[in-house]
Length: 90
Image 1: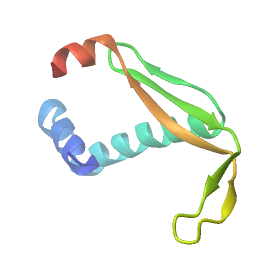
Image 2: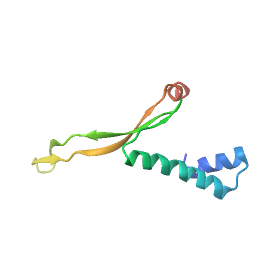
Image 3: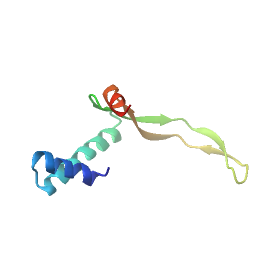
Image 4: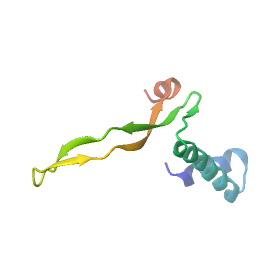
């Protein structure tokens, strides 16, 4: 499913103009992204939680050369499904 499909669902369910439905979908994803950029968690009750995980700097090996390299620390967006979502997918 793509953002366009989500917008189409809104069009059908709420009788919205297609442009307004797209705007709503974009606004929701922008809000989630902006919150994660600020380091905040986004909790959608019954669905799940979006959050940012911090990995530590670590040592690795280049598989081609065997050379030891330093893998820098980084932040990664994560999602943890809520109980209701897990139950629905079973």
